[in-house]
Amino acid sequence: FNLHMTGDIHAITAANNLFAAAIDTRYLHEQTASTNFLWNKLCPADSSGRRAFELSMRPRLDKLGIFKAAPDDLTASEIERFVRLDIDPDSITWKRVTDTNDRYLRGVSVGTSPSEVNKKTGESLGRESGFAITVASEIMAVLALATDLSDLRARLGRMIACTSRAGAPLTADDFGITGALTVLMMDALMPTTMQTLEGTPALVHCGPFANIAHGNSSVVADRLALKLVGPRGYVLTEAGFGSDMGGEKFFNIKCLYSGLRPSCAVLVCTVRALKLHSNEAPPVVPGAALAAEYREERLGLVAKGAANMIAHIQNVRKHGVQVVVAINRFHTDTDAEVETVARAAREGGAFDAVAADHFAKGGAGAVELGRAVMAACAATSPREFRHIYDAKAQGVKDKIETIVREVYGGAGAKYSPAAEARIARYEADPALRSLPICMSKTQYSLSDDPKALGAPSGFTVTVKDAYVSAGAGFIVVSLGTISFIPGLPVKPAYYKIDVDLSSGSPRVVGLS
Image (cartoon, rainbow, N blue to C red; front, side, top):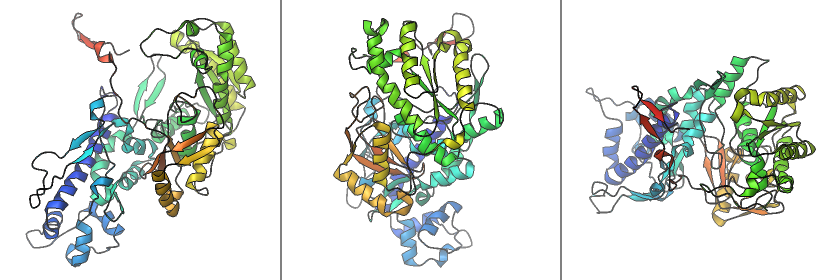
């Protein structure tokens, strides 16, 4: 995606970083300029002495209750309230982003130049900050959940970047930047049409992280695909990681906002993964050779690890959706191991379980899987779909603990003092209380402990923090320390990427 394939990543990076620049710049000017100076710059008089508001200023005026069309009609107090956001620098949560796995950007100092100083006091106006990977930007989640251009603009305007010193949330609308962000993003709202090697159409659009955002492709792409295939066609859309991550958020966030209802869910598993979840196989180390347990038949490990797969099947079934298990087959998997998985899946509540050899055989290797999906869709109705919680009726903690009990298999949650304080504020605000929950946790376990493999139960998760993604439309609940920007390994993929000039015309190599 960062090789300019769709353009989504570059648009999001440009929009996100424009907002970041606007925040710091506004803070600098408010600290170094008088109210009169700010007023004359924001609403300068023309050659006839008349002032005019920019269209982008209207949302902030409306928020302040200033419903005057002419700037000259504002009182001195109204001018002060309008031009001064009074940003609390310690509250700025909006990070700059890049689409490079650069671990040294996790923590940075910004504004350290001699020009970022209050000349009257000598006080530095710099601060500590950090970068995130582009797909972690809230703008990615906004793009994925927007239903049209008008909805995209509204969601961008609601994004909260910081608060005032009085504690009032400050949004993109307050900074007057919503229109510019929309212009940067409007072309990215359209999905990119591509195709598989065998010519099957594919809409490639968005990619929010499932461990920190909702982890699903876009609502626009789904709706467009459904229109293209017609009432008797089939659309497959992806939800990242497992049923506890992208799956749960697909059902309770994406379906909530899109109004779409799934007919079936395909749960992908591998024999190797189930062996790992047995808790009896050696750990898998990136870059190291797989242990013999993963390369040789071990029916006992497969049978024990199937508990993890069954937990995922039951999670999907709780939403009223049929499950077809796709056993993504490796060449080392034996027929007996595959049959062990299939039998456990059917006994655990799956509509069917089918070996999938598409990696080796292309479309021909997924024919039986396709037939199983079609049969599952015919055997059920989307009307059977249900959310695991009622976003509007239930409180924030109630929704969190419903997810912990019903999806993760845990007993409940405990909260840090910081999380308690934030959640109490959200509970007191009807607009925030009614938002769905986006859990931020490890993808390696059903619990909040990445080492708890299999199907753990009875545990208590720790809610360390919570914050509102008001533009995306959910409350992010953090169950652990999640890195917002990955780092490069000892041998990154760039060692294999090059341009082959030997054949006359340049050819890129090493991308797969």
